[in-house]
Image (tube, one colour):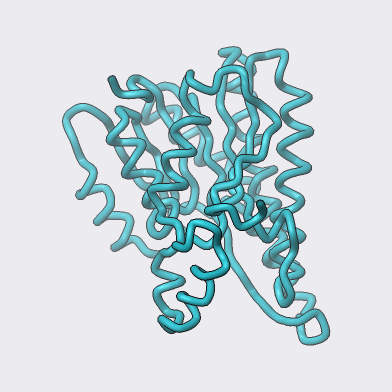
Length: 248
């Protein structure tokens, strides 16, 4: 039995990496998927083509979740195209790493805007629909760095820690309307971004993880399936660590 049959999800930042992995697993679980991308239309079109089936609908939208008006427009378009909306996965994010003494104000502001403000924008945009239908699953992508911090990533850590506080507050506000808000905090996930690192660096990361391996996008996607499905109907306001035991 497919766990998400008949449901419709928005996944931000899904043309690559973890977002792409989530889209693939969601389609496999019977979910209709509307996903966003920032600029790579070729990758978005390729994902649409790859996941096209007769059972579910998948469509990409070029949209900047960090822009309030674009977020509102996106949700309006998705509701027009799909007719309903049950799940929001806030996955869009960037890094602008540097030590604090070298970090520019622009790099700090941009990371906060894309990683944290986008969560506000998108959650605000779907809230009315979720309230009206009295159900909805909100899943926000944080990071192990948002829980424990990391040298050279004060902007990224601040944005990802903020997501946790935002999600817990929303869980308290919307719980009485059967709207659940949870966070996933991935650890070292091997994606196109980590593929640019040397094998020596990657192996060093793996050795510091109790499970002695990096995670895959599918590991995060499967956690999203759980939090989006009825299997987690009594879970809200939580942070699920998908990190191979890094924070144990």
